Image 1: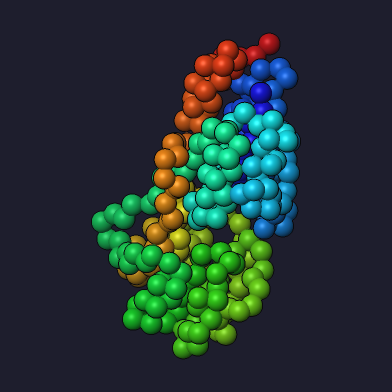
Image 2 (image 1 turned 180 degrees about the horizontal axis):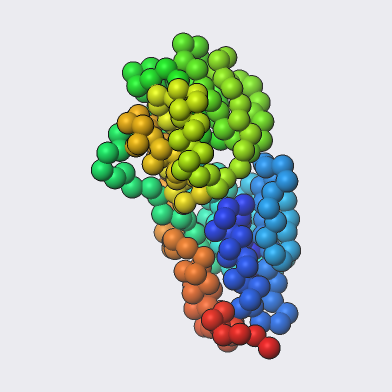
Length: 262
């Protein structure tokens, strides 16, 4: 019994923690991280870091390591690996589940401007503000590189690489973030527009509440769709339930995490 989790997210780490509790003796759990973040928080179980070499490479890995189930718990915007996972799972005949945290939903007082891509978000900015809090991560900054009339506060875990906006201050930080902290960032840097991806989750959501309080617009980049035909759950517990059902049909039993062990 071998489960491969494509991870790197809070939900993937939590899933790994649950699985080491419920797996029977002899079962194997491997979490795969893309390796794009220096010093990642490692989940329990086996961990591999780095790409697979596309869909064909992942399919070969699934066969070589006799993977029985594949869970795509990557970031909601990791579109390439998700489509590679779908192709590889189909080629290797391995069941695949997508774990995606729910997206954010605007509330009363929010001034959200949906965008279909980073390029579309960049095109919307000149009409919305001049001092931008850019929280889309260090990848894809080229979309904003030509906006020389705007000033950017760019926050990411690791330092960005060019091309990026000429007038930009970099803030290296890792969530979770607090509402008080986000309020202070917006006030101190005189931010008048926020750009974010619809990543969902609580760790980075306080910026949305701070923007609402400050009455400033937020450009929200829509997340890419999950590959067609792939079942989706919105939390680690749902992924455990899916695995229970899958493995029970093959005669394998998992422990109940609600029951104390030993």
